[in-house]
Image 1 (spheres, rainbow, N blue to C red):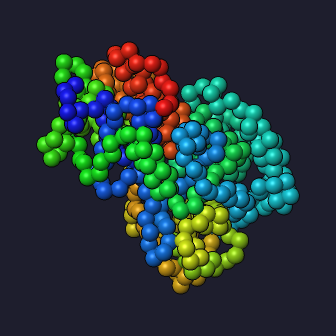
Image 2 (image 1 turned 90 degrees about the horizontal axis):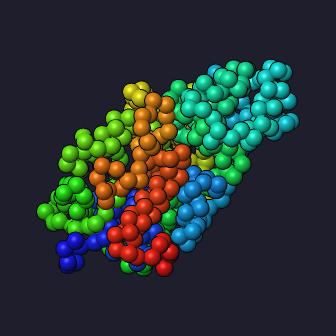
Image 3 (image 1 turned 60 degrees about the vertical axis):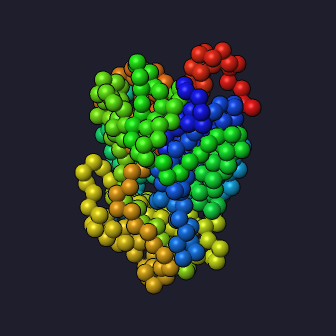
Length: 439
């Protein structure tokens, strides 16, 4: 590398949670790192907006207490401030609300299931945590469920739980193992809704990285990842500035990373881009003055891909008692119609809470957001993506799409840790530094 203030050991592209985690990991072992974010805020899809006194995330968010993100954030010293919601709720079946059979008494009284179905659901839920997701062959979630579950309504309930945990309705493409692991985590460890939304996590990670010595910059759009003689040499900014770096970690999606690399068609980036299957969704966030129907806090669609959760029943998301809730329609490839999706979500809200429109103090509709840029699915070829791009030494990738079995924010966090530690190992080998040890 050349000398000067524009020279770094590692440059990180993207200031979402993956980029912030990678920056914190690198900075705390005294590496010279720069984090570049093109917008004026850090957090990526983990940012939180304030609207009329209510705090809105970019759609529903939940942190799994048994997941990689929770562990990594705790290891970094991030304070995780939130509370766990109750799993009790309702299902939507044939246009009606029906209590979910979440405990033995409700299961016995449920009108959703035949007696044989009730027995099968009870046995299946008892066996659920005994399955080893890592031992499952590479099959789709539908293939696994149809092998393990005979009753059609029990499968409907299982698929609804899977959608809620994975934000994904593509049961013919999801790999059964990772999806089952996510369901197990949601049923066992549970989730946290975070006080103040997700922005406090991003802010803490930024502060940790800065205190450890990282340079973090906003308003820095990247035009290219530079490489010379077959090795990464830095990043080119759109304003013409060149930052020299021995390693670059891109936390952008596979298509965006591909576009930044000259000759990417000759690397694994081509396959990762072509094989990616993003998870998409339509999201409606609402802040209400009061809840029209008390004790209706959680609803999942059984015969339609929708979800409702009242987050402020446990999380502080306003300063004046306004209630924040989220509705989601899970979208598949090519089945997004923004206006029709918004109508469906509004009609779902009317079914759950009649009269809700009179209580609205703020709303946010996101017609087709990317929940994840890729997920573990059938049809992939070759090794899993990242952390290194094998054809281009010094280039690493991280993000929710660079999964090695994790999902959503867990994939973002775990891939960031992998990329940071592999980059450190290479730097250690090249410079003779000690092995990875936090400062």
